[in-house]
Length: 369
Image (cartoon, rainbow, N blue to C red; front, side):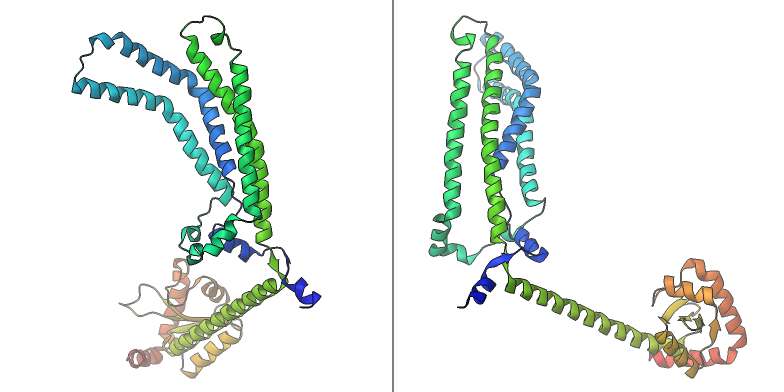
């Protein structure tokens, strides 16, 4: 293989929008589990700092009420069930804000990494995932080594945070002097905040490193060769040409259909050279005049020529013709704001072309059959 061919096969080009779109649909974007953990810890720490006092008071009041009345509680199936239910409700009331915040943080972390977009193809079954050689390649590669290194860093960070937190908390008076029982709740709150804040700081650094690596790895994996870029550009051009051809075909078909019904029109309103709009109105069938055909420039001239060949009355009215062409839709009734103007045109046409409208009924019947 020549040097030119080797350079051509190298992934040196930035991914195109289509490539990025397909990768997002397949779930191939930068994902960092550490970032999710950090956001969950941050949410738990924030909620704990704001709600710990009220939650502790709730649990304390329940504990006092339960222990003071414990001697009067009869040990029966009904009382045990109600007591356990009250305990669960009291604990759930205290833990609910933290649980809601953690779930919300997990969803937010996933949304931030995926751009709040669904990736249905990421969960679809892939036969190649059952290939042992493919699985071996996923386990023993450069990315797996980096992930293993990050896992080791996580263990070290957690251990270091716990060590520093424990060393600080062991200096608390709780372990060296008698304290009141109420101080225990204050100590537990301080201990929780201390451990979580240190853990959050340590994992935050690891999450930044891990997400940066995933971002770099994903961008490298999505790089394209020059040939891939050329092929995609060629395919896009082919699709664009095909769509343009389909639009031209649809336009020709519509024009053919419009020209077929021009001989059954009541009147053709012209600009006179730029626009032409053919209208029909049948009493008892149409709520308002209907646009049979419309065109501009060359197609307008074809409409007028076909109408003249079949004796369709033509009325020159520049403002009405422009508005009918701009606002009217083929096969639909005219806009209400043009009712009055078109009614005046039809009244004149009906009065001056009675013989044509006598023949028009027969022409429409033959066209319908």
